[in-house]
Length: 210
Ligand SMILES: [Zn+2]
Image (cartoon, rainbow, N blue to C red):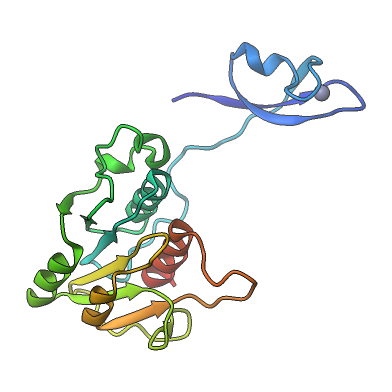
């Protein structure tokens, strides 16, 4: 594993502080002013998680309905792994975990997850619903309930499909019609929605560990 160190600029008027790979000559010079730097701390990152917690739902699967951004897909994959998502469904234009540009944001999580690609997300949701899955949609809307204050309507071992939608248009309206439950995050601010990967991260941690 690559070791890192925290370095600090020795120039009294600068004192720029930053992480650098141990032994990397780039760490010897201040990125701000170019003066020499000194080692000030050795971080202890990368160990096992200190809070290993069992998830609430053991048969939770995730459908990414037409997520356009590779950055968002990568961030979602990493979070999905952390929250014990059992299987991924990738609908429409959503890039598969094997996409070469995904590995950088997913940081290895892409190889830990099993996944299925679907040309048509609505068909996929219909089939899973017929197979007994509860369909949960993360979306704003009149029928949406507050994820933080509403008890989740499922037992621990029920199969559940959580659907998150496209950055611009959200979850496909036909999928919203198939939903057993529409979950939304409380909002306070000028913008009426969050980045999709951020919203997913908040939602899945509340669903699994909240
Ligand atoms: Zn400096």
